[in-house]
Image (cartoon, helix red, strand yellow):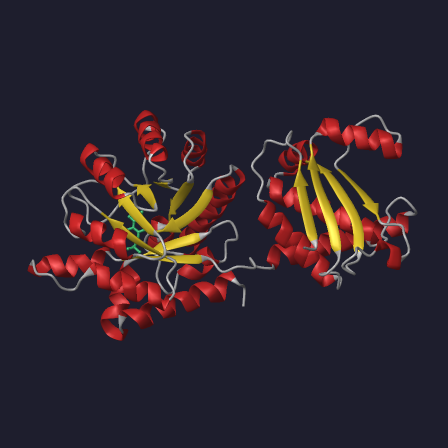
Length: 397
Ligand code: PXP
């Protein structure tokens, strides 16, 4: 376990320790120190001030302190023969206001401080001379740039929405094609979840489908639904692995916009409470807007799914870039607020790449493009091709 992270109980901000562990791990890897040990300790200002006083005789907090192991190598080795490089202490409180000052995310500021602390462990020192300070600064910039451009270490997940298999079935009012069989094929092809939308008008997915899927889905069943009493009761009875609250209009062809969580906060809060009581995590399908994300976090949702429709439907490159930036910023904000982030709607084999490359997004929910392609190449192949696209971009290959 090369990176050991501890977070003081006094630090109450949501922080992705996995993200920091990955970033420090890849930094250590680039110094050939992947198998060494580094301890990262996240503190608040008061605790940091105590360390600063004790070890540097300065009566104030600071952003980062690092303590290299000064013993000869053999002594610095743990019992398992792993080299101990030392400890990096960071005040999350100071990092947070520095992040605001610099207009960057908290995780990015923490990453910069980790790099700074790690370079100290590696023998760099900005206090010895101006020349060394410049060398260290340049190095920090370079490493930060490289780390930001290294994609996540794990692949983004792909959940497949099988509603349109049911759409074809309902066109004839018979029993085929069966979304339950389709879901099994998607899972065998590598999908990490199955999504169905039980609409109030039952235009595609039927109650029976959700009940049978509950029994057969081995990965994760995500039930999309409106906040209607009838559907809420069904969800509480069937208990999918999670639900996604979406707005629903009878006359729409598909879900048109995100849920207005701000306007419906009381209803959303009540629905989340009911689901939580039944042990069902809730995702809110929202437009990539700051106020919606902030409200989703305030209401205690576990996930948000960012609506990618406007990005997918953009007619010009400029418009698409603008929509992409909104999604990127919203994903960052949601992630920083402690929400788990999904995205979906309108994603296809061509436009999925940029979204899949966003490190803050955990899972994509895709239906129409995959089911359409399945008509030509088969469902197994269509899912695998989408997985290839997603992997290619999410791992930055
Ligand atoms: N996410 C949500 C909340 C949706 O309503 C839909 C459409 O059913 C999707 C994702 C998938 O969109 P598409 O079928 O365009 O891939």
